[in-house]
Picture 1 (cartoon, one colour):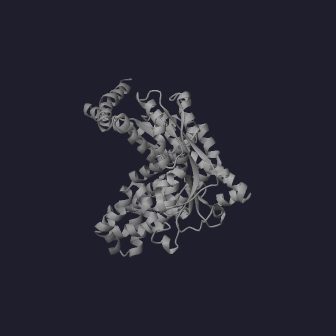
Picture 2 (cartoon, chains in turn orange, green; picture 1 turned 180 degrees about the vertical axis):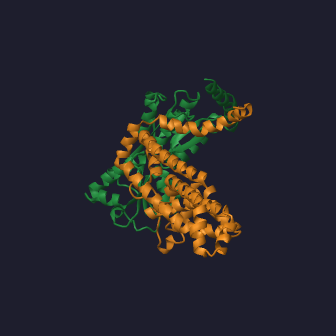
Picture 3 (cartoon, helix red, strand yellow; picture 1 turned 135 degrees about the horizontal axis):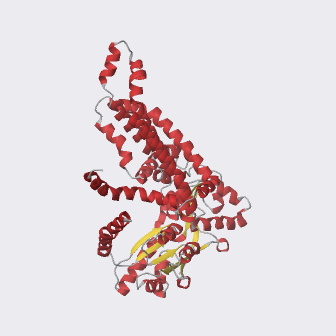
Amino acid sequence: MPIKNRMLLLLALPLLALLSLPLVGLLGRSSASEVWLALASPAVHDALRLSIITSAITVALCIVLGTPLAIWLSQGQHPWATMIVDLPTVLPPAVAGLALLSLFGRTGWFGSQGLLLAFTTTAVVIAQLFVAAPLYVRATVVALNAIDDDIGHAASIDGADVWQVWRFITIPLAWPGIQAGIALALARALGEFGATALFAGSLPGRTRTLALAIYVAAETDPAAAIAMSVVLLFTAMALLFFMKNNTVVG
Amino acid sequence: MQRRRFLAIVANMAVWPAVVACSSQATSGLNLTVASSLNSVMQALDKAYQSTKNTPAASIHAGGSGALAQQIIDGAATDVFAAADRAAMDKVVAATLIDASAVKVIAHTALVVAVRPGANVPDLAALATAGVSVVMADKTVPAGKYALKLLKNLAKSYGADYEANVSANVVSYEANVTAVLQKVTNGDADAGIVYASDVVSLGDKIQVLTIPAELAVIAEYVAAPLRNAAANAPDFVDFITSDSAKPIWQQYGFTA
């Protein structure tokens, strides 16, 4: 290894250690048997099932509602719309929770008209969508922008219609990026906590997702909290691994 | 080995002096780690302590008692720990960070039901009416344990179904009592079970249903200095249990 690289590694090491050691510590505090035990407990089971169902719905909504937005954003300059899409990813989750309450809480715009969503599973999905959809939209916009327009033009000169260009050129070329967006959005939805706590509350089986269950368990049952954290950690790792493999191909 | 020493040097030489310098500049008062519901009264008690003993202001860290106990065990800098129940205190005592003999009862407060103005909850019986939304603290924190006990007591006078009917109306079990109250004050839940001391300062932002004495549930607060605390930590605990502190406790809805 050249000296220069070794120096660089030394400089990189502190942050790499800070990012990795806490997670190693988390694994060190749990054992496989504890994780299995936690997975078997009804409370964890409920939270995990709720997290999986709501996150899956969130990702489906990301794709259905986010794809048209991403295509529109990729076809022209929309600085305001771009900023709106970026905002939820930089706002503290508590702000997102308060903002959603201002719409759907009892005293909120829609809430006061009778559309009460606070404390429902729907609220969990909306909170997740608010924080996760921007990640999907951004990734898809980047993937679409990276495609050389000339390829599509060449195909249309050869007689392909708009739909065929999308079906056989654009989507296949953008697919790795779109998949990365799906994985990121899914991971973010699974980990969502702050907005859910404020907007959806914490009722076992209905609004208490895995992230909320970890927060409650951390008070009295650290072993269960750590076991649930390990489950989330491995899920996130699997998703990131999946995402990386796909972007490398692209 | 080499790598571990490098990390230790970085941690000790670079980080610690900076942290210590910052904190000692900001305050050299006591670090008080207190249950959420004690936040306001502790600030007032510390102010009185400052003026009588001429000490710098304390920094107060408030949260759910169980979480705070865990944070202290995990190394959070604390001189005095004040908890909303014995279980949280016992955890820190078991970790040998506090002497069992140093733990003192500092105050009591009763549980009450906080009701959103405009909600159709005129009395305690109405908590069991279908369609009323109720928020409680989770059973893993003191406020939640007390709330469950309260429902059991109320069932004695409102009928055997009362407990189950109220439970069916619960829309959220929060991780601390502050979050319970917040969901009622911002109007998203109709009623929440909280401490009397929590609602003292709220005026007409909230309606309060008090519990008849024979069914009441009283929370007991305990405090203790940590073993390796600042020298005046035991003195502070003595002060908050003294007669001169009583009016302050009462002003904030506690009985000392």
